[in-house]
Length: 184
Figure 1: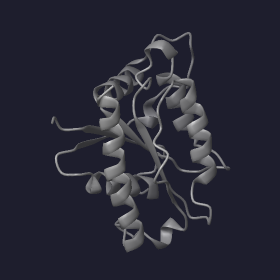
Figure 2: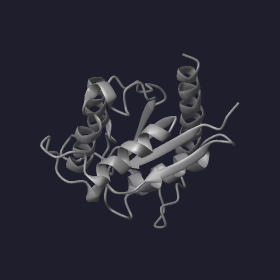
Figure 3: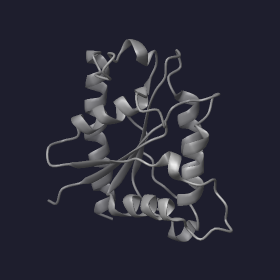
């Protein structure tokens, strides 16, 4: 069996973001033999404009998604939804829909927030948006970490054991989700 390539995309531009720390933790929990890389560059994408012909940062993102077997999005929650930069990235990579690198690409969502609801609303919005590009999003287990500032230390290390176990289950389930689509 060939190694599964997973791409991580963080919806936050903050370097010390809890979601960036969560994405790193997901990468550490992926099964042995899985290749994990992250794409950095959200802040380099221009605001979506269909008059532009795929600027270089957009082509870089599309290429990274296309070369991965699956994508994990770390989805922060701002004002009960996804951040504008992440929405902008989805607008770019979902067009044109027939040739979107997200079309048929297995994806999964994780998120961490300081509030008591985690990133529940943002993930629901993200799932709705992924329908447009016919992107199969893993439904279980959900990783919607509430009060994340209490679960990660100052260095961004996840110290909460039940949450670490959840992420381990999530990582294994995501690779299985990807493998199901390889067989089709």
